[in-house]
Image (cartoon, rainbow over all chains, first blue to last red; front, side, top):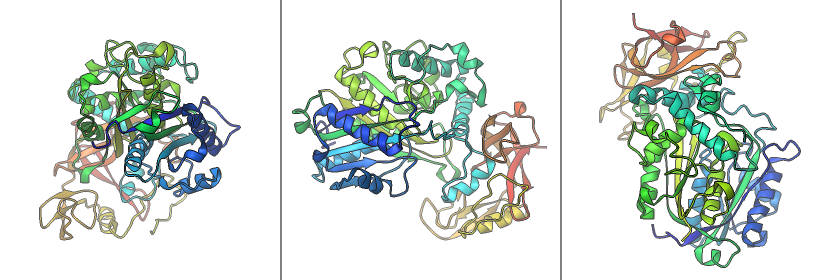
Length: 386
Length: 142
């Protein structure tokens, strides 16, 4: 990829709030932008590119946010492909900077999903008017249910067990216990996960991500400029994005977007799986992690159950993932891709304290938006600190 | 886009039927299930749409399905806060693969949820949920 190592994430900020009934979504976004600019030593006057998406924004939300912050950027990207949007935005910002369309881009997200009482996973869905909706919404799909069908099929085809999925949730909680701002920090066991109620078979309550408020922002600029700023730059090596859907009724549902976006990201980055020191994998549900790791090629299809077992995904394991505690335990304000990029950058800088991955030089980020069992987007980044 | 009037008694979402999909929904109302087949390249598709997704040809024929298939994936839904569904928990949502090779999202009915299995042979049943709308659901093959 011609822009490999030429663009960097220079500043990041994760809003510490997990419940903010006293704040608007836009205030959380503004505080996040300020935090990310402070992190790298730039100011709002330096920003000439803006990328955002949200659940509470209108179809022209980015224009309203520019009004709110009194911004007139030279580059705008309001791509909304679900929770993976901010992972894709990172690559889009890099391409725009590389092409000379802007110099300093901010990617931002904010949400009051918890304090506004969004029933994200089980609220029922009526659709937004896409043609496909009329063939699905009458049958009662929920977000949990659409992922649960993938888990059921994986268990049927490969003998994957509820215990193997549960270990993912247990590992995320261990990581959250080392993250002072994580929403749920008390350790849990595999037995706890299996004893929690079944929301949509085979997924239990503790197989599902939490709902929180939150927000975050990234500052992206040229590698050259980033090297003069306050923090260690996280260079973009490669990226990929795509979708998977019903494929006119002929889809293999265990093949997900990560298979394509991951292959593109690895090819473009020129690195191999063995080079990845840690990964941030969207964990809307435990099955999302297992399926994504298989499709990214960290293990073969069907081997995910064994792969996620035995502590491999712990911060001190062979492939640490979601060291912040993930959406399963730290935060999930509706669209979590933002926090995947932030934690990966912090790990590459060595800022993660007790949960720091040793010698972390190269990190992979994969965001999923939508639902694996109906239609979804996937976006992959590979970042490095050299 | 025309929207069917929702009677007070039926609280689940009804399909937003459009000009491309109306012939399919009208057939379902007659308790007939159809797929589309491209007259140029032969590709089968569901749901209905004007152009073939493989070659973009508008030349389409309707192929009548016998209504048989197998459960490809399913979930027993124990929690859904939406009106209509929260009163009918638990219910089974599934992808059914028709014998013709095309998958449809649907509900499995006339079967205790704990007996539903992937690979189970099923047959289409036509549920007239309102005077204007019929849904295709599936039950264990008899």
